[in-house]
Image (cartoon, rainbow, N blue to C red; front, side):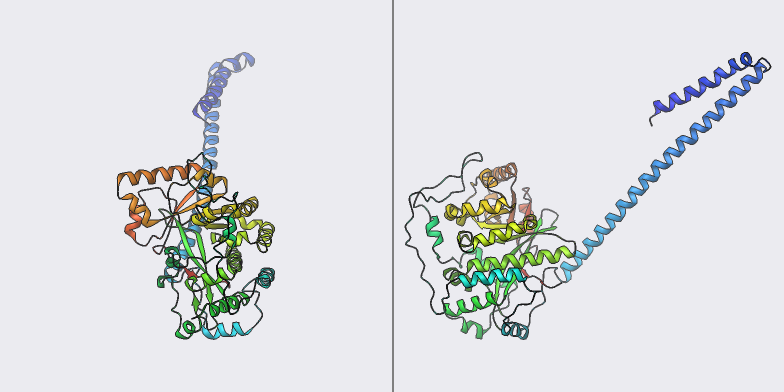
Length: 466
């Protein structure tokens, strides 16, 4: 209550006491005027004391309520602080996502058993994976040659993710890039690209492949056999790397990667299996396994009341696979609660070259509420508005390219325009491959939403068990 109200209350009982001083002698003639004035003063004093007591009671109640609110806020802050301390301690001691290394003995025991325990992969997911593997062609001794001679149809035009923010995604014309028909032909993947090398270097925490394994994997047929065996026996391991918000460096997402575990427990990176798996048509199975491992990890984290977003890399071969992809989309639709935590990631070259064959699949995934991320940008003239219309909510930028642009005034203006365009379209920019504090300081000149790189954590094997 404000001062005006209290003033009116005081005037009211002042008027009542004054009226009593004049009215009492007239109403009751036996009362003397002096006594009436004394009674009037008593009425005013009692009224003032009651008014003061009421005001004090109201203030006390308000103060008590505020104190309760502060106590609740203090408890919440203490709980959050305790969680942060545990998170910091875990990241300094043993990262939450880091797994206990599997010994060679355990790996051999696992490979000798044809069954897969429920703790490693769900029965429904395992059945779906085995159905997919059964439908894939077996090529034990020979790798199918790449089909680079597929002739594009006239209406199959590759997509170019450039143009103005309000304009359409411009096509570059037939023949400018591989078309959807050529994309469906299983061609080799460039496993030696800078992007892939970045994920499989020694800094990623992978143990070197033993001489025996290197000898056994000397041929493509041996690599294919090992990869297929790893898929059938659930020895595709999930690695994760944190993506943090800037500038506070709090982990918001994890990017997921696949590693093949050989029979003796050694980990084999994509630099060995990616090309062979692509030629043999196993990429969809690897993507499928990666997704289910990611779902497992999400469910485990939810038991501990912790949720993160997971970026899952998807090959265009997976989206264009007419045998597997309908089952894949059906599974996503039946598990719509996953859409808030899984972001499917595609590269700019794949989207531009294969979009005609991927468009329907992406639309079906988006219809179930799933979001997408664009990686490996080769140019910065990106049509963010068109990307946002297709449910792309994240775009990744290479640290080195941004720092090269930052070196001159025109480059800085280009970065600023790009950041504004992305923000206007509702797309968050993620700067990846940040390795040093100096690089981070230079990047913080611009309001990038998220960062990723060895500065915040190298890829580590995830823990599947609780």
